Amino acid sequence: MANIATVVNFPKGNSSEDEFRKEMKQSLAADADEIDIVIPYSEYMESGASDNACNIVRIARDLCKPGGVALKVIIESGCLEKPELIERASDDAVKNGATFIKTSTGK
Image 1 (cartoon, rainbow, N blue to C red):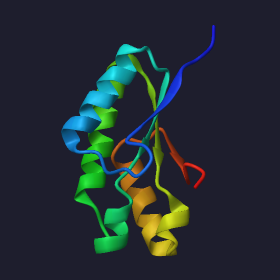
Image 2 (image 1 turned 90 degrees about the vertical axis):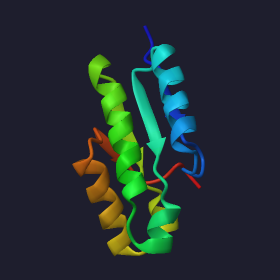
Image 3 (image 1 turned 60 degrees about the vertical axis):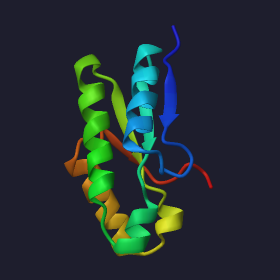
Image 4 (image 1 turned 180 degrees about the vertical axis):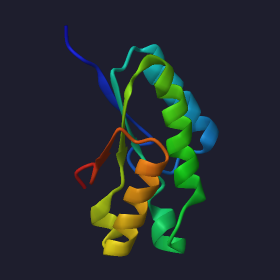
């Protein structure tokens, strides 16, 4: 049996919270074993921090937790560029429930 993995909030990480929740629920209903989410990384570049990114990770964590679905958070390190932004995005992902951190979608 093959595992199912999918990506949510792809590619720019700029879905509304409602759209994000809908994508997450569709992915879980399709029996995804792993969900990769793209955080709203542009907000880190614009303001240096992102309460929204933390919220998105928490929403995903809470939806994934009951079924034990792995949650990978994509921080788009190539776009963030500055080490302090990469560190902040990574810390936010871990503190808010990421199972793994991925650096990029391959842009």
